[in-house]
Amino acid sequence: QLGTGLTTSFAFEATARGASGKVKGAARVDVRYDLWDEVYIVTRIDASGHAARVTLPSFERLAEWWRDARLVLIRGPAAGVETVDVRLKVIPFSQAEQLDTQRWFSQALSAEKSGSAGAVSDAVEDQPESFSQVINLLMATSIGRPSLLEYAWKLAVPQGKKR
Image 1 (cartoon, rainbow, N blue to C red):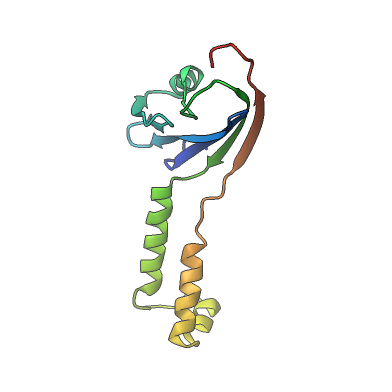
Image 2: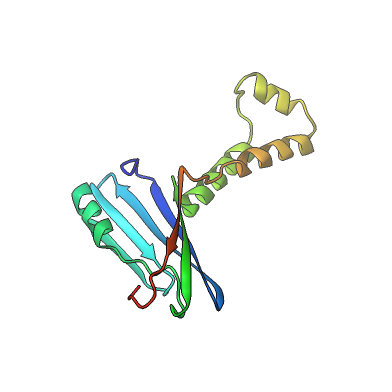
């Protein structure tokens, strides 16, 4: 699904627990295949605030980038951390694409009605204006970003080793 031209987001969340309490963090990697230039555009931001963007010429180079990628998920002291819970959500399109789609859909629904799309449009048009506005709002806001896949890991942290 990475070749659709939409941005696929990989959202990482982590919670480290230990004797001193818990610390949370997150990182995100966005991957978009540019259909025109036939390249993968990868944007990443991690818990350290490090943001980077790279353009990769092939799927093989993208796979290589993933193998070498090191994302900082949690900032803070590593001393005393016993376990880390990591969650990954794969989201089929970016938040910006979601907002663009909602905006386009809302504008399309609020435009002058020049024709009919059938019985559903007729039923909505026969209702009071406020009813139509509620239906339009519900339809536009239903365009969400549910994750396609979710993975979770609970990792034990060996003491005395570099993390």
